Amino acid sequence: MDMGARAEASVYARPAFGVAHAGAAPQTGFRRRRPWALALAFVVAAAGCQSKSGASDVLDPSAIAPTASHASSSSSTTTAVPAQLTASSAATPKGNLTLGNGPTKITMLLPLSASGSAGEDGRKMYDAARLAMTDLGDKLLTLTIEDTRGDSGYAKDLAVKAITSGGAKAIIGPDELAAAQHLAKLSGTQRPPVLALADNFAGGPGVYSVRLSEADSAAAGAAAVASKGARKFVLLVPAGSNASAIEARVNNALSIYGAALAVTLAYSASDGAKVVSDMGSLVEAPDAVVVASGDGNPTPVLAALKAKGGKAVTLIGTDRWLERPIDPLYEGAYIATLDQSETGPIADRFKATYNYQPDVNVAYAYDMVALSAGIASSVGPNGFSKQVLENASGFRGSTGLFRFRADGSSQRSMPFFKVEKGKLKLVEKQTSGF
Image 1 (cartoon, rainbow, N blue to C red):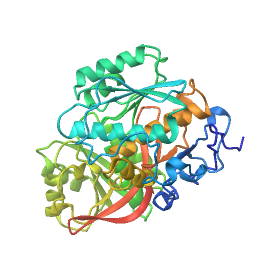
Image 2 (tube, rainbow, N blue to C red):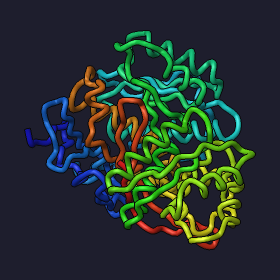
Image 3 (tube, rainbow, N blue to C red):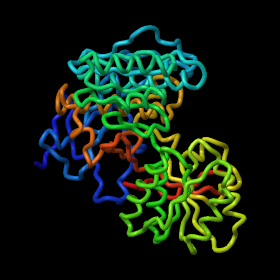
């Protein structure tokens, strides 16, 4: 049925921005839209409706008329939360915090009182959740935010309690990797879905990885190069549990353009030169080499590739490279990754409300609360099903186009960059490795 789902009260659905076909670059333009009252135009196949263009909007700034509390941040007298200088300067919230009074109960697990960057990121995500509730969720959700303290064991216990208590329809978090990995191993088909915020988490059935993964970054980068005509690829990937997932994602992305992996070679931290030598004996003149790095440093492999000489080969890196300062050996490499400064339509309003610049942590948290509000609005409290969350058309939020897969991984469309003179230079604003 070709119709948009109606949202609550004055929130009206409109056609979602879609993807014409697999591999097509989606439309963009969030930054140019009006920064007031964000609304949800949520179209879900499970509800019997589907948008004309496929993808569902998590955010739709133009779907609702501005209200007094949103039209001007400076003059608003109804802002739900006070401004603050930075996320780290805010007082750490104490105890269990409940936002909203809607019929759909959601539990969110954040490292609010953790030390260092983990705690700062947790407080940023807390602010994002408050803004999303003010914008979208207050009458739809009852959001309970619990402090994991940055302790993986405690986060696991909180998550298991939320899953088994029978009250929460979905869990957003945890941010701790070990806790998320534990949840992915639990059995059970009736448990609520988990939208895990842990970094470098591969996902699992019913436990969805929200953040950009190395597999997705590698796949999107390879697809972007394949779309320009490259056909023969090599994948160099760290040996370990993530190797097969990265290989499968890259292979799938390349197949859209008629390209393929000639060989995949796993390597350890100490054998960068050996894996490059092995590649040379197995593959003649590849068009491009994808180098995944995992937790390690890619430079030993990059140095060996440079020393090999011969025909210039297109080099494709991943977002994990950028966890370290950009090395001169990165020069000329292509990387698909989220723009850390691009938080879409919420950027101006977030800064006006909290007096600090939002980052990708803010965007992830906001999108998951907005997504929860959208499901609650369009399908109801019992709408958090695999069919809804794994909608193949995906969703569009402040982090761009994304969708969840049955194995718990996520796929994202993202900007495509080239490393030039030690900096990332934008090549394409959006590319898709779907």
